[in-house]
Amino acid sequence: MDSNSVPGHHTPTASPGSYCTHTFLSIQSWATANQEYGFIIDGATLSLVLNPSPDANSSRYKSLFLQICQNCCAVLCCRMAPLQKAQIVRMVKNSKGSPITLSIGDGANDVSMILEAHVGIGIKGKEGRQAVRNSDYAIPKLKHLKKLLLAHGHLYYVRIAHLVQYFFYKNLCFILPQFLYQFFCGYSQQPLYDAAYLTMYNICFTSMPILAYSLLEQHICIEVLMDNATLYREVAKNAMLRWGPFVYWTILGVFQGLLFFFGVRYLFSNPALQDNGQVFGNWSYGTIVFTVLVFTVTLKLALDTRHWTWINHFVIWGSLAFYVFFSFFWGGIIWPFLRQQRLYFVFANMLSSVSAWLVIILLILLSLLPDILLLVFRKPKSHAQQKKPRSPAAGGPQSPQASARPLLMRTFSDESNTVI
Image (cartoon, rainbow, N blue to C red; front, side, top):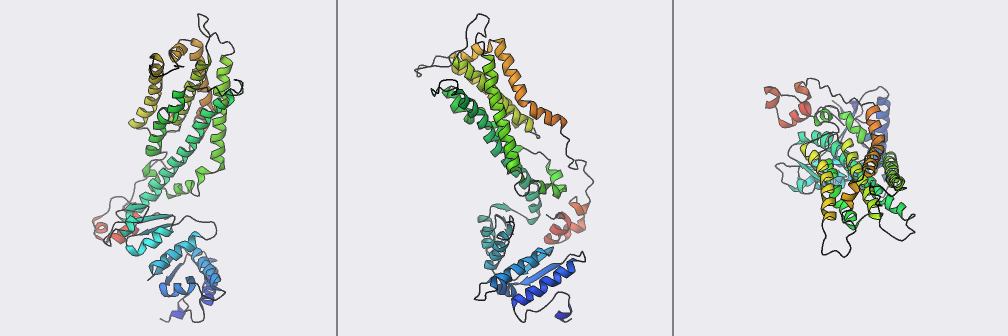
């Protein structure tokens, strides 16, 4: 069959610009018929488009070629040099909208392409380990790409996004009462918290729960993520690290910080909080604020946790228990190496007051009330939790005939039926 008789097949006899223009116009005319088309180009033709030349229209050639690729559902570039692979990735990466690019390869000739993309994935194959050594992630087989993107990619983005914003939130709750305290202590730089609390807040008291969350959280189970590729779009384009979530965490931190400080200040409007008339002092004030702070930010994370394991239970409730134990231990012993022991018997004395107990519990509940109301009244999203029976073509148990076929055919036809 003559190549000119095939629709869309034209030999670039004049120039790459006229060839690209004619092909682009042809694809645009075909697109009106609601049909899908693919585009195939070899390395020799691609070099005429991508390689710089003294021709003033060289940049126009690249623009037309990119528009052709964007109007096709699939583009296949064959017999390419390693440098051309990297040029293709660079062209897409620098295009309008700055898309996130991913390159996957299994040989040394794919290294430049893997390094050029935002995310590089290497496959452990028979062509050596050069691709794996230069990649961001390594997988043993191509079929594992689906789980890497749809499950692990989705979950780890949600975990990291929550980790970053939670750290900002809990430190805002931590610093805001200390900042407000300066307006009520004559700007004397008097600390609100004891030095031990200042040191161990981020190191011991609140670090382990968020660490376990960022490693183990599954807000949607892996099976559902694998069966519903559209869920991946919910976290696309950095959806959880935009201004909306950032403002929410900021407002929540400011609200709780103000509530901690002024709630305890209202309690101290009558400093005689004990039955014997003994007056609470500065360190009792700071200890009550710090106790409400530690319990609130930890329980906030517990409310956000959807996938509970024994590790989550251990680190969340263990962190709260450790804080109580440390406060008793640190303030219950006279330490000979300390010149001033500010918290001696302060924590135990604080818990002997019924008013202190009431304020601590009430402030914790009021701080968590917005999250509790959201959990109660928010309409749950439907993520197709009811699993449908999976046919062999959808990734279920394969038939003996399917298992006997070559790996590449089984990967694309039987197991990787979801396209992003």
